[in-house]
Image 1: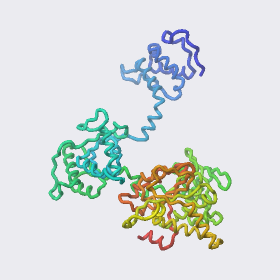
Image 2: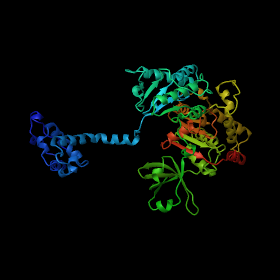
Image 3: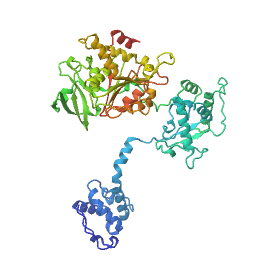
Length: 577
């Protein structure tokens, strides 16, 4: 649109005819407005509004229809027809709001504010020790902390454990809320005063002694019983408002229900409620896939891989780096990985067949469909983060080691392999272990030694000396590290294996993954049915957290291994025990 000529005197002294005429679209839009209103709005509207309308109308006339033009003047009640000035202001507001419409729509789709009365949640001490940021997880609801909770919090702040760290972090959070300008402990601290905009409620403390009565069978001096008494008193004081006790202690929740009190577990730390809902990384195509999609599929060859471009109702269910397969008698099979998704169109890339001996990785061939999927992820240099889950004996560690050795010693893609794991014992702790860091981690790395022994025997042509030299070479490129010393490190061009990752918390998992530098690949493996860490479940495990957060990322992949290949005894025991 060409610029208008420079004015020769101030704009507020010009008449409307001195301004350049708008485009034909602008004329049509401006002509439609006075006809709908039945009057001449341009003649009475202020000059500033008229000038803004002349500038904006050509751009928005094709996108929005003024409200005054949408309804004829006869449809308004008597005396309620829009006035010229108000109509102009309304249309001006419509044009200004166009820039914010997209953001508002996205914000509205992302989260809808709940309606209804806000609840009052009474937090147990173990919730604060479990998640120091739990105060900001209750949205518009209010939080109440009994005095005994603050006393217990003070008793746990000493030490270097995770619980002590969380207690100190919670104390700092409470101090920050109390230090905000205008904070009044009697009326409660606003939870959004420190920048946590999602928390709209208040934090209230027990500042007065509350009158409550509990059954005589509950000792009054016990902290849990005092919290139950506070909940009972608050229920009476704030009736009919709902007062809910939040605790990680199952026995305390049982006692609360026995007393008729509302109670619930702290759910925010759980990624999934049901382990069966975990993303598996693979999807079976429907039986009529070729019949319904065969005519529309575009295919082309690039190197050793064939690409298929498909569209249809199945595409929205797919994710980047998800594996798809089609198996049906009498039909051609398809094993592919989703490499690109654009709207309702997806591009599938066929896989390298590691079931065949010619594609063996360090002498290891895959034995089933899911293992082949996993090996494609492990050997792809474009995939930086791989998670493998499955029952005992599905080949997770063996495949990760074989892929790592091939890419370190043969392809020279990485400089060395770093192996670490959570040091959580199945039974009683055997005490302190002597030696260096690597020697202390030795007893925990029995699985590594077993798999290295298998990989060392894959080359049957090498003699005794050859196998010994290979074993020394392999061990020189594998470093065993403890998780306790990972903070602050950066791994450059390393192949990192995190074994038994189901025993890690989400915070520990984040600490390990963020150690990755340029050119580093991280492989997390674990069996969610064998969690040994206390207070950790399938839904709150760090491995579940990582799988759920990284699904769909172009440089991350996951696969759940379904069939055990260790032995028929181990496979049967996994099913029946």
